[in-house]
Image (cartoon, rainbow, N blue to C red; front, side, top):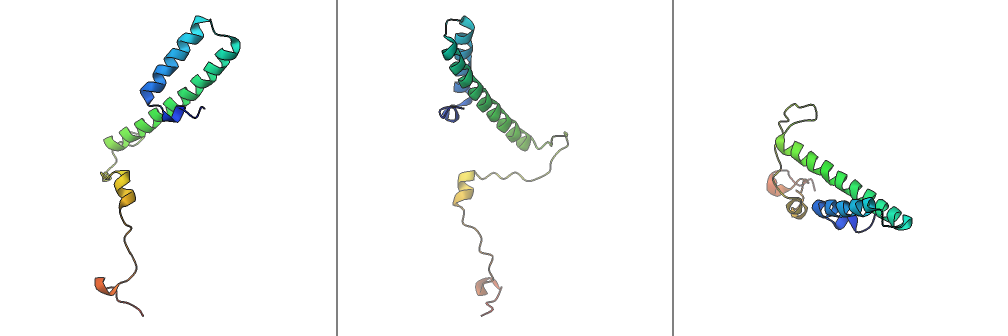
Length: 104
């Protein structure tokens, strides 16, 4: 897959796939160019399928339904991944301030 493919949004990749398909169907490209375009198309297609799988997983999580159609009753974590990364980790060591007592 090309290095540029991950930078594309789904809609951009789909539009490029459509353009590649039309170029291949018109039959005016050389064999070498057709193979290069086909290779680019396969990379874009893989990227699109990956993004669709990711979106489907997010939808399943948001709707709270498991793969077998049963409802999942777990709380939804509404904090963004950026907020979670900034959040300090709780200090779990005993501390005299929180009643845990200092063993030393």
